[in-house]
Image 1 (cartoon, one colour):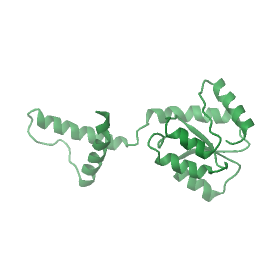
Image 2 (spheres, rainbow, N blue to C red):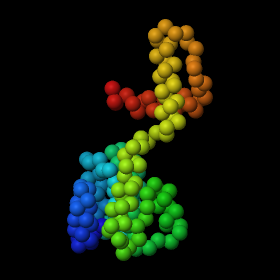
Image 3 (cartoon, helix red, strand yellow):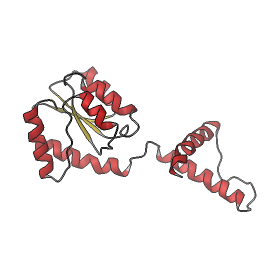
Image 4 (cartoon, rainbow, N blue to C red):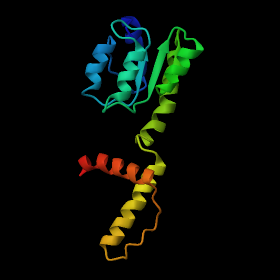
Length: 171
């Protein structure tokens, strides 16, 4: 949000609910913050100076640190096509102006735990597949015969390889 009065009002309302707030006055300032800080949720106005909200959301989605952060967009009005495009970018909700701050806080509080519990960019099926592959490999190394308990397609093997590669920095 680029309106300083609205920023102040929203910050006070969220902080009254024990929700920590960080404000960026425009999209470029937000990008600078996203490069160094992981956020639990992002609220952005779609009409901002210097960079619009759609451009900012597009950046967020490719940002390593915040790419999977839930985003709420604030707008004065959108047509059906723009709404559909925003939803494709992974927007959680589009909040129409004038905003009801209590409703915004309620939406954020309802959605935030859902995303914090499922903050993985990988599907549960892929994680189960990787667990099965690890079980098979560990079984082979522990002296079990090289009999796999799971069947892997080429696509499964590629997914396992990609997820395993992403896990390397953990170790």
